Image 1 (cartoon, one colour):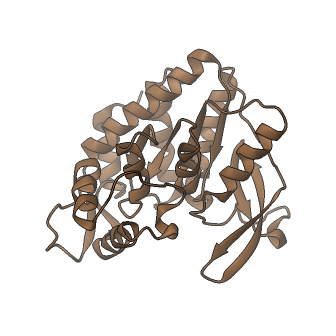
Image 2 (image 1 turned 30 degrees about the vertical axis):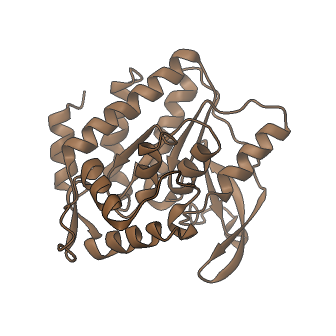
Length: 271
């Protein structure tokens, strides 16, 4: 069993918490864009409250442990591992609740290169516990506006986890998917599930637009978020997102395995 102390040490050792690779400059830029309601940073959230840069910085200091000093403008950002552990406990409790009801779930990631294994481990355990892991709209086209213009991707599932691929990448041995912040894939998936007459997920697990897009539509959603992803923490503050876990979301994929073990243990799903 992985203890909180052991996971805390791991988080700090691999820089998922403590001093992380995400720069203070990137985080502050995201807060400025969010305050201006730039859709690239809102990623599906339609904030009810007015969030200025000062309010966002205070929120991120509370939720993540970043510096609340606006004069601190450069260098690596910081995540308090105690906040990560507390959020992981809440994350595991939501999973435990859905397992207790045997309810359907949907998992999706905009970080397939890094986080597919983390969510895949959760999907395996949820399926073994009797929850239906939904895969609606598989193969459906999703048009996403990127910095390179409008791109068409295909919605796919790997180990029960949704992601988007470039059409030419759909062959054996290809990359696991593309990095995306867009809420459009989860909207397409949820619409397809509804059009088919259900079932609809009682919990959506993921990151980026998967969490924000689902939460904004009224589905319970939980996920991981970095210090430059304020949308999930704003969603949590406004009651749209159930749990946002502060963690660096771009370290090596194998570094997330202890998080899977910790969450499954706390959710009473360890095998």
